[in-house]
Length: 534
Image 1 (tube, helix red, strand yellow):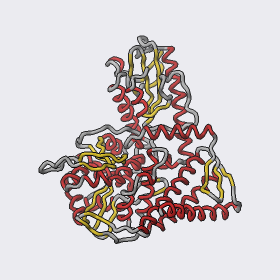
Image 2: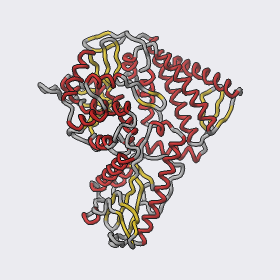
Image 3: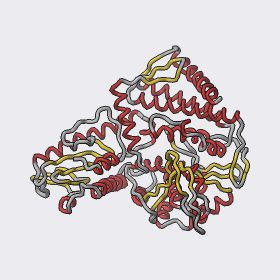
Image 4: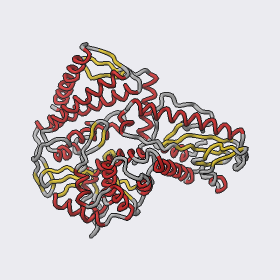
């Protein structure tokens, strides 16, 4: 039955695609590339999204979230671990636009829905449609990397990349899959935090596993366990607040308020979870269920107890009350292309679902909108350099004080400035110099926008070439006006970014350490340092 439902979805959507392609190009089969294919795919993505929004209108947004968080992970699984998260977020975002209401009942104080076989068919039809849309998104990314796309009547548009492009894209996807790091879209890497005054706790999606439920205030629990799919992840948000507050005025006031509202929400997360005795549901489903009147009281209480740094963030953004805080979160709608998760609050009469996972993902996306230039960008870059230096300091490549003090120094030779040292480490007789590039990863980059992809590739390749020249010069001139590297037999260098950057050909640079890419991500550098590679 589910296979039939999924097959029906693909047939219906393919008919819409065929109709639009025929009307646009007046042929049954065609291969396009460049601007033509990007424009056509954008139109098809919009058409399919509109169809899925209509399909989603049969259930309320609350019922959709309740249902989608219970489907088997295999429904959205792909070759990469990120496929499941992307496709599920896409389904949840589209379903959040539904205007339907009702259908819920309360059983043993739990939200529940009575589902018939026909409901299963509708859900599977919708999920299959979302996978079709996700395939169009992926085809768009291929097209903007240079692959031609074939449009044929009997199947969805198919990219036809060269072997060379396929290998480059596969390598990039594998690197991104292994380099995921919360808030890295901002151009920095978050520091794990045990719960300081600037900590936030995000919920990160995981393969299901058995986890002990943390004890709540009051009498000790009986070591209850639950199947966990959403794992709490606490990080220090202080550096991000520092960067944001360096923006003299918000570039986009609405985004500023959203980021402040989400940061405050995740900073008060344990108060929501523990003081109101709801945690196992968040671990299982990634959301909390409230009655509407209780939700408002929870936000009122949390607002009065915000830590000092979050109060500064709130004041900077222009939020003036708990009521406005709630209204901003209520207004957070999702966007499917480029993907921005939402909604965060789903309300159906008195029933409210506070989606902690969507709040976490949305903050990770929107944080990329800050510190693009000026003093804020300099602060962001400096923080990333310190983060990379901290990584070196905690590894076998930790440099002695005399060498470590070279970090941040402008090296000079013959009275001329050579370069600044962003991060430095050494091991045995090897010196490692790291050029840190605090690259921002916008929703447009994730969506595969041609200009953004090419701009990031060009910047990274230029940085690699520039660093190779400087490291080579230092190899030939190990002693200068204010530095002395003569004790090292080997001087090597690498360019490090928060996340991988797609490049068609990663340069093979002789000054790069063996086993490390010339343009590596933070996680790749961390892995290399931890392995003790030399």
